[in-house]
Amino acid sequence: LAVLMLLPWARVAAHLDARVSTHRLLRPAQGMAHTLVRARALLSPGILLGGMALGLVAWGLEAIGLKVVADVLSPDLLGVPSAMGIYAVAIIVGALSFLPAGLGSTEFVMAGLLYAHGFTMPQAILLTLVCRLLTLWLAVVIGWYCVWVLRHTKTT
Image 1 (cartoon, rainbow, N blue to C red):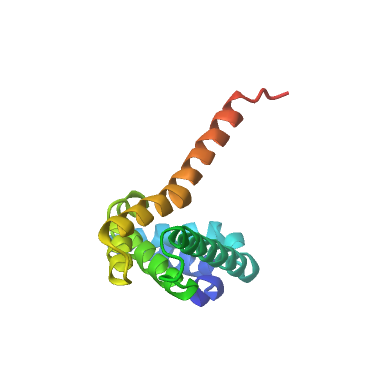
Image 2 (image 1 turned 120 degrees about the vertical axis):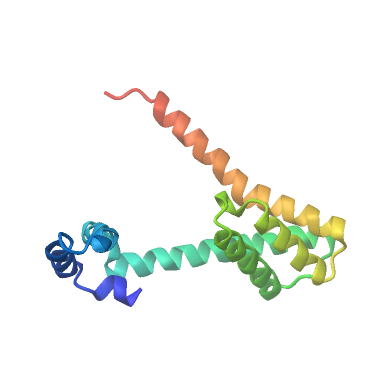
């Protein structure tokens, strides 16, 4: 993050512009440098750290949601730190799988970790599906509703 915020991307892009005609392999780096020059406003420390903090809060609340749902089945089996760990590991594995929304891999890891934590396999699968339904698909439905509203709103 520090490199993204502090590196003088305009100078890097200019340096690559001068070299790309003789070194065609630098073309992808040139494109990335120009992208980072244009994204400079988003890479300011306040916006970058604020977005990161907002993301951490959102992840934390989703993990607490997993704990709340788990409490319905077995109130004493899953603590908040364990729920946060299980949720974070499952989401990271899903992101590393490069599948859309980590579909499949996130659920597999989350169910496996819940099972390892003491839930029965049917409970672990149910918790995983309910958690993903509430944290992923509810957001998708809200997003599509917003798209529908924005498309059907008359501009004046």
